[in-house]
Length: 370
Image 1 (spheres, one colour):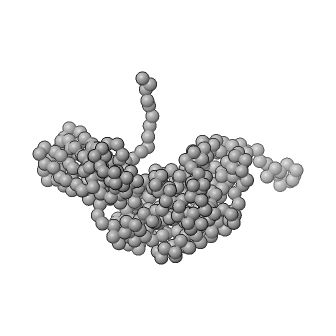
Image 2: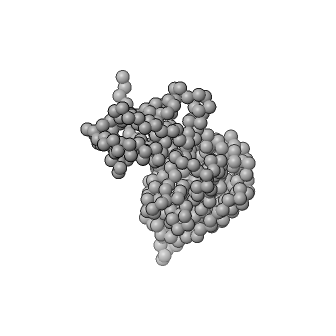
Image 3: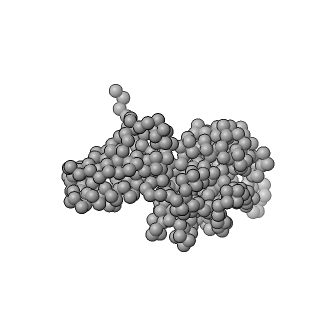
């Protein structure tokens, strides 16, 4: 048999949708262990996790590798769930619940919905929005669940200014149509370019993108802290063009700086969410941007388009509108995105070689090749 080897950066945390297993046998972990994220995901969130560990502490169970073991089981194993429950489970709306069994003591846990424990009614969420097309499905899911959503538009990465204004206008138009608040934060483009120095040739999903997510989520978390929002999240997490882990890591780092502010992690890139996203985009006829936002992503997008025989991006093109959910989704299919990032790995080397060939001579214009 062929030996399989590989690595993964997957971190299973509350909000993760289990599709295969019915239980987990593990030991009891310390409060600062990342393994608690896995346990919390299985039992349905922080409240259930705290209840289980309160029982363990109260019963004086032994922790760590040579201590007592516990068996975490789903309230309804996947193999025995009715069809309607299976559908809810598959689209991420229902996270599994379970029970802790240690000795003869059993602490029951009720199955939790995709947002975790507790009622969402009226809970305030500050949603950082990169653009209207990435916002629709997330806002719809949150409002359907009863959350009080406010859009926070802070995107100093978007360039040129015309593109920035177009994307902001679409966000404002959609917020007004839904009757929800939107916060228009500063453009702050000079600070963004200052932070990007030295990373101009960094590829998409590289160090420059981490800086960009950090900058935007830091400002989002600060605003949430100052204005009483207990939850933040970002529409960047919905895009197939983004590394969801990279986005979520930035959100978690930002939220950790402020007590009472939590970053909302969830897999927002499921097929169901993507379908809803493109349906809303077509209904609203949103402006369809052709690149992430920054001037460097515009450069890399045009380099890739040239290799595909496509014309360069036209900022604000009047015919660049979402109109057909199937066709729009196909343009941003996983295959197209994967193809871009396969080619993108070589962009940095190509660009460096191109810049190295450039010459500028103030005394002899014939020597210039800029």
